[in-house]
Image (cartoon, rainbow, N blue to C red; front, side):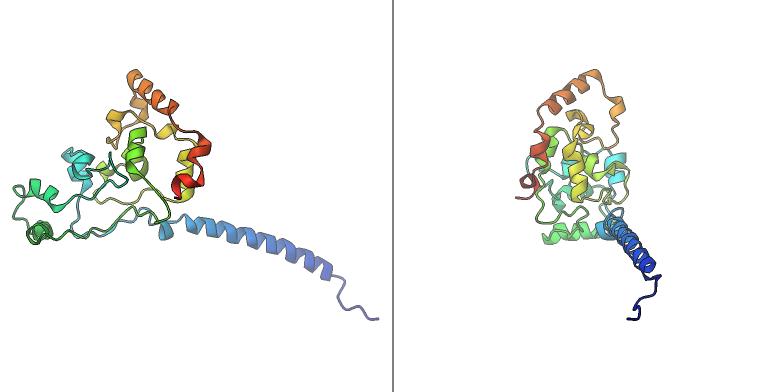
Amino acid sequence: MAQLFHRGANNIAKASLVLAVVLGGLAFFAYTYIARSSYLTGRYVEKQQPVQFSHRHHVGDDGIDCRYCHTSVETAASAGIPPTQTCMNCHGELYADQEYLEPIRASFRDNKPIKWERVHDLPGFAYFNHSIHVAKGVGCASCHGDVANMAAVYQENTLQMEWCLSCHRDPKPNIRPKSEIYNTSWDSKDITPEQQKEVDEKISKLRSKELLTSCSTCHR
């Protein structure tokens, strides 16, 4: 019986298997790279807002505390979006006639909330509570970055599950003294002995890694 395949077909088959493995690896690498890219995560993307509120000006220059606007950050799951009244507390007098601020005046006058574009938007199946993170000593900057130097706030981290788990597996680097939680430019190198004692106490009271990384902790 005549030979159906050329003698070199074995080499072709082996090369095809190697090529398939290489292509599969490249495809997996490309997938993981794209999944973490700003194209899918929205990382570093500045969103257009009805009024381009500058955190760098209000927080960095004027020194307004995060809690002045985000009033429920210490007591609720959501940090809260400030009502227009909060804006008008200042801008009823300051720059009250600026055309740039007309959307704020219109919102206050018509009693209609401003429709801000959400920057940090977790999916509905992921549970996140601001108050518990603040109570444990996690600073705003750990998730939101140094907003005091952002003219327009953008998403600094991917907000993907692997990013959350990296902290839940080892939360110690993100724990800071209570007095520095809202200081977005604080550096742990500047910690005092008294503050270090406070941080160590907070760390000693953290739940186990097994519980912090349990599925039910974030998916309820």
